[in-house]
Image (tube, rainbow, N blue to C red; front, side, top):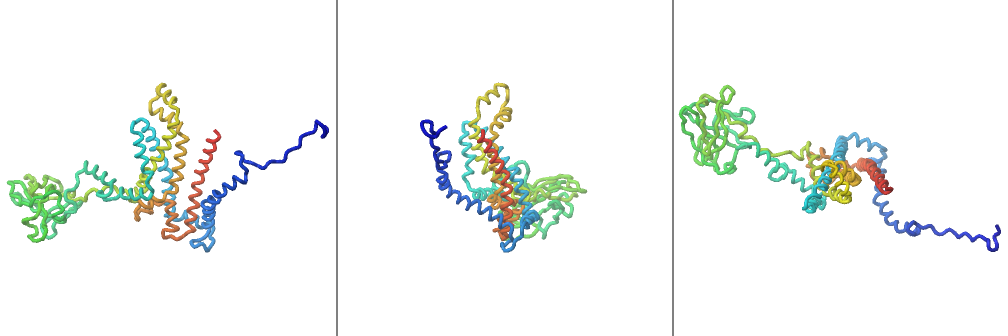
Length: 448
């Protein structure tokens, strides 16, 4: 074909500057992204690279130690405890929060005041970790007068179990013949006889600390062929009086159980009245009198929430309180997009509510549940604030987690930045698989 005349081919245009899909030149897009890239490098890439480099050096950074810091992580008892507790957090906390969020989201759809309930459950998310830690440090306080948790526990316990009448009371060592007889009880060394009132003086309690409005102690009168006696506080404010004798102004101890014991067996029992006197039947003649330990046992103080055994579950409970609202809101948003026709069709086919929930609602919410679960798993791997604030110093080692161990190794008195950096790198390696799973899930969602 000739190149001249009417049949000549048109000239090929020169290549145009490369543009993006949106029509923007590549250098313009890079220019706008440059500040974000610089910020990303300064706040993410550089700290990661520096931590990896610093983890290969000793405490002060002057000597290269290679992988020795990583070896120290798995040979140190505190760090191994932190690894174990972090594994417990990852296995328990996200699953528990997600399950509660799912339950709340489903149930609040069926009540008229669901919005108000969601607001209440979500409200803890507005509280910082620091404030939440302080709140739950008080909630878990051992003293029932201060800790809400133990106030509830002791109230329930005391409802079903009788508490002691006079805790910490004890016999007067200078008078009377009551002696300790094991199990917190006190028994007379001699026997009692009918017609001779027994005297059982006690001390160890301030008169102004006695419960209620106690009456003055009264000497018991002889009770025929039975045995009588008096239990009283052998002490009065200001002092004075004769030890072992009932003096004016000394208070009666009401409600003290008294047992008559012969050959190791209880043959009779009675309880002291408002004036401190008691009367035992004739079977008590020739017996020894015993005040059981139940009269003097210390009051029930509740559960040691922040002790070595329960400190980690207790802190996880505070985390669930904070994050259940987060899970509920996300799952509620996913639940709003579920096709109601499928749910109604299942009910028409005879499925009960549990079957609809298990076979339709949960599978359709699976993508949302995975998002919530993965987000919480990443979050709990770096949990620090709650553990540091709630766990008291004696049990902080038992509640230790990797983020806290990183802080303690580097800044909390350890001063070993090499080990601290190695723990930071370990945390990054633990988070990476979860992040990779999340990225793959997002790509699959995008392909759909």
